Each structure stands twice: as C-alpha cells, then as structure tokens.
Length: 161
Image 1 (tube, rainbow, N blue to C red):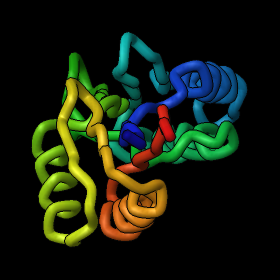
Image 2: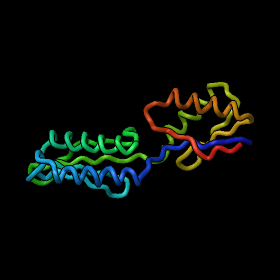
Image 3: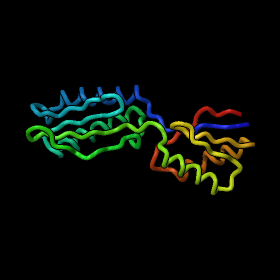
Image 4: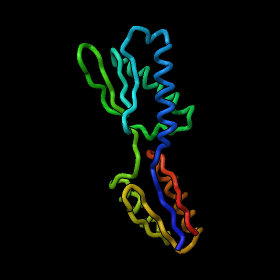
C-alpha cells in the first residue's frame, strides 16, 4: 500500500554552520566591538547574548541572514522572549523545531479526514504517516498539506509505492 511520511526536520549541519558564521561575523564587525554580543548553539537551542534588546535584534537579523544563505527555513525557529541576566546584559533563547508535535499531528489528521480523500493519517512519534490506495491520492494529500499548513516547514519523505 503506498505511503509517505510528513516530517518537520531542520538540517542541523547547516544550522551549526550558520551559527558559526554568525559568531565569526559578530567577532569582526565594528559595531559589536567591546560588547557582549554573541551567539552559541547547544543541542537544539541557539542562545543570543547582547548588551540591550536592540543589540539582540541585530544579532537575530544577522543569524536569520546566515540561515537563509544556507537554505534553512527560518520557520524552524521558535523565538523566545529576551531575558535579563547579570548586570545590564540580556539573552534570548531560540529553539530549533524538530518533529511534529501532537497538536499539529491532530490538525493534519483532521485536515486529511475532512478533505474526503481516500487516505489515512497516523501519528508515529514525531511524524505523520499517510497511506492510501492510489499514488494520485497521496499526491493530492501532499498538495493539500502544502496549501493549508503554511506556518511550519513540512517536508515529505519515505515515499513508498
């Protein structure tokens, strides 16, 4: 029976490279000299540091540019609120989304069920497997998902015929 998986996975090698490039540029830029501006990556979290919220927005823009140049969709970023740390320094934690959460999985299931396509969707860990009798139905399901779910960078893999 034909099937495919709907996933939400960032290319972490490219994310790491973009963070390293941003850190290198922060070290060489004139407007960041003598400040605490920095960016670092730990596990699946990017932490931005700065002297003020204005500087955090500059570092965030720089990071977004580097991610875009490396073909990483910025919709993977879950940006948190700026937090004050010791002195007058601030930091901001950005989580890199990986996997489909239960809420989005249920939304995908409901979308496919309401579409009257002859496909079934099943949530498996952090992906949604869609199965159907015909390849055309699966391609229609992919088109429907791409059209309706625009806030997440979903991709499709493991297409079996």
